Length: 121
Image 1 (cartoon, rainbow, N blue to C red):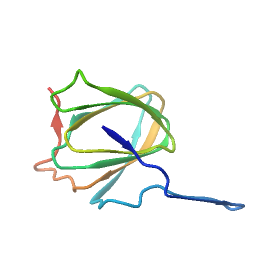
Image 2 (tube, rainbow, N blue to C red):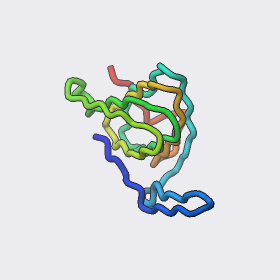
Image 3 (spheres, rainbow, N blue to C red):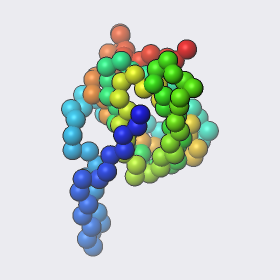
Image 4 (cartoon, rainbow, N blue to C red):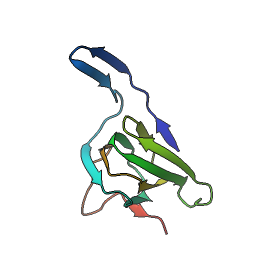
């Protein structure tokens, strides 16, 4: 339900590093998210949108399950440096364990008049 994405490029020298995080997909929207410790985000799924997350800082438990199958969930602990993708129809809930910051990439631009966000009942 979560597809972890490995770095496609790593370069380090005396100036620092260059790490290739994502080199596939077509992204229509990119967001920066910050969350306080013990906050909860998500709790929804998308019918048509693929999301990729790049964790910059913090630690988050991500609970995922296919829509309408809440008893078949998995929980992943993600932290700074992790990159993962969530496909449509996968409910995702973020339990923020420490203050966190991440980047969110969307395959479709969010239409605020008719958003592709569906809360799980």
